[in-house]
Structure formats: structure tokens, C-alpha cells
Image (cartoon, rainbow, N blue to C red):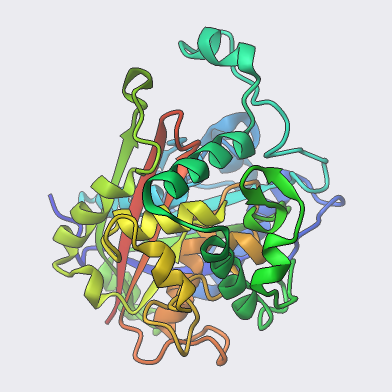
Length: 389
């Protein structure tokens, strides 16, 4: 069953805080939920579907449903890392199309910054029952170390350079300067990036995303409710999600799950990469933007380095305006999960509510895409195509 045009995003809210030592995680979820509902012109009593991931207290929808006093006919606690919330939009659209709920709430929130989580540089904690633990744990893998190796491989195979990767951070900073809530507002240069400290060769500090507290929420609903709210109409046109395994250790280190979710989402939406006016692409590291640009079909494999070096990601001048809020590299990465902010900024662009300095002209079709968990160790991926009606 296709979800094309069967559900609409009517509410989108990004929590303004980036440091919240005085708030609980549940409070951040609740404030984000209320913000999205206010944006939509709805109330908590209207919500009959709730979608969340492992960042909620207790790791399931139950505690937050109780905290918000929701009266639900449908819930979904799918946990696939940072792309969970992109996938939740598809799942909400499926539930709405099947008549299981009419107003779906999706929330994310967390406090890694105020609790001092060393997200990328501390060894990954692997549960003792995970089948990969005996093989991975002795080597104490870190997230930045894994992405550093992936970057080395992309450079080896395709001649990608540190300067090309740096151009991605430069583009993000050009956009972040206009976002009053962005954590990093300073515009940086190529030299700034490649002269910043090495974290995991060849990745520099400025190749890595920010760590922030905060949250966000989305409201997905039926066509009839959407059209009654007198809000800009943003329809779900196509979506796909996958789990890309490591093939028993025989990984393709320069390939992401976007190689599957991109073509499937485009096919359902009935559009091609050339039709996309704006792209929100998950940017936990600069290399991930590069690889997804290739796997989604915006560039041939090995050619994204030149594409970004030419400034094509910068709104107003580039061919593919990207992450116009500053993205995870400069703006926000709440709870170390960037999927929901990618959808939020895509909605802003389609509604023509982005900052005027970065608003894409005639933005009628947008993409949000990203991975979950860790590329190279088996990861999830989700792609979403949205359109303005």
C-alpha cells in the first residue's frame, strides 16, 4: 500500500535550547510535543497516535504516553538510532492510511551535553548478549574511529580530499549564521576546518557534529484534518527505510543504506533527484554527507567531493541547497540523534518559513534522509520525500 499523498505534516517544532541542565528529558519531550501541536493548531486531546524511539524515558512509548495523558489507538516505539524519526513519519503515514489513527505525534529529546556524554570519543558500550560483542569489544571501538576509517577508505578509492570534506562544514556554517538558536554561528573557512585538531585521522574536530541537549516534534495527520487547519500543506510523497547489515564483516565501507532507501522513496514519490529543490541530509560527520549524496543519486560514486567543493550545498548559489538550519555540524544534534531536525527544516523550507537569507525559492519538493546507529557496523537508514501542495 502506497502512502503517497495519504498523510500530511501539519506541525513541526525544534526546541530552542541547546543546554538544558534544569530540565528533565520528559519535560523536553513534552515541551516539544506542545510546540508542534501549537504550530499545527491542535491539542493533546486530539492525538491518537504516538511514535517515539529509545530516547524516551523507559525506552518505550508507555511512560511518555502516561506523562502526556494521551488517549491512543496506535503507538510505535521503533528504535533504529538517529533516523528513527524519519522512519516514524513513514510509519505514521502508514497507520493513518490504514485508519489506525488520525493525528500522530512524533517526539525526540535528550541531554547529552549537560550530562557530559563523550559521544564519539569514548569506547562504545556493547551489551553482553549482542552477537557482535565478542568480536568488537576487545578493540574498544569509538564512533569517530569508525568514521575515520570510512573516510580513509573513501579517500583511497576516490581521491576525496580533506579540503572537499571541509567544504561541507563551510556550507553548514554559512547557513547557521542566520539561525539564532544554532550552537555554532561563526562562518568558517576551509583552512579553519583542516587546521582544527585531528580527532580520528583524517577527520578533524570541525568535521564532526555538535553535541547538544534539546528536542523536537512532528504532527502527521489525515488529508481532511490537514486541509481544515488552514496551515501550509506539506504532504508525504514517498518514503523508505532499511537495515544495512555488515554482511558478516564483509562491509562496503563507502556505501550507506541510502543506496536502497533513496531509489525506493523516489520511486514511490514519482520524482527523481533532479526534482529535489532542498535536501536535509544527516551530517553527523562530513563524510556521511558525501557518501549519502552519492548513494541517494545526486552524484555518481566518487564525484560528491568535487560537487561540494564547488559550493553546491550553499543556499542561494548552489545546485542543491542543504541543511539550511546549520545541520548537525553547526546547529543542533539533540540526544545525539539528528533525524527529526532534518524533517523539521524540510518542512520549514516547503512552508517558506526558513530564514529569508537561506529560503529556497519555489521550494515544492524536499528530501530528508539519514542513517541510524553506526555505519560500518550495520546501520539503519531512512529517506523521506515531502511536497508542498
